[in-house]
Length: 234
Image (cartoon, rainbow, N blue to C red; front, side):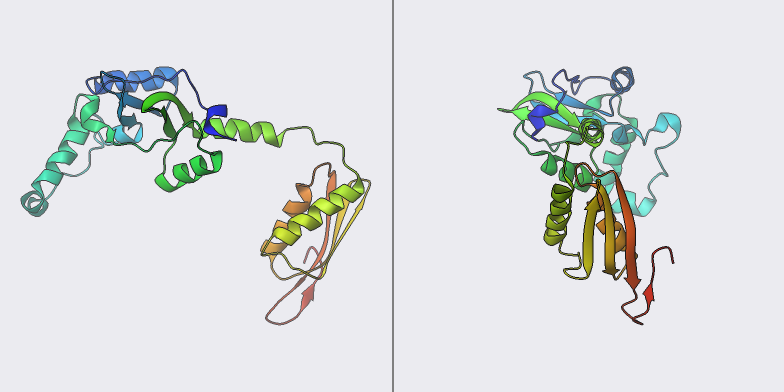
């Protein structure tokens, strides 16, 4: 899937001259965690988020005043911190040159960006114009739909083939010692594994096979250090 399939097109934005008070009210009224900041020509110049407003003098969260040494050696940095915690307009608190995506950006790239940059919302630009916003909530909505989709009707043979194919692709999975059997869409897992993490991952693969009703874990854990074998449940 791509961004264009999920993004919100009716976006709310603010100007650099918008007051911080108004920006906060707009976020609350629209139940969003951030707002794109556009200049008078409609070009994206920044983004203001809840995080930008967490350190504020008005609520006593601006932190300790910089010491004399930092003020002496890095006065510009101290002044910048003061602006961020006291500015009355969005231009003083917004994040400049924000990260953005395009309508054609794949969702896996969006997810990686959000995780790596600790971002909840991303502006979507096309021809340098804001055309939408995509958020973590948008990704959650599509995930929820996928998780509750009604499984297609599958045969025991196709379920077994799916599990074996997924195990073959997984680099961590044991390439021998596993036996997969399926009867009336109930999967039985037999054989040996060498860690609890392997056990859980093999079970997850089986649970994700389309049409599976139940997974029975009969896997035996073999301790790589001692060679001792432990049956399921021990």
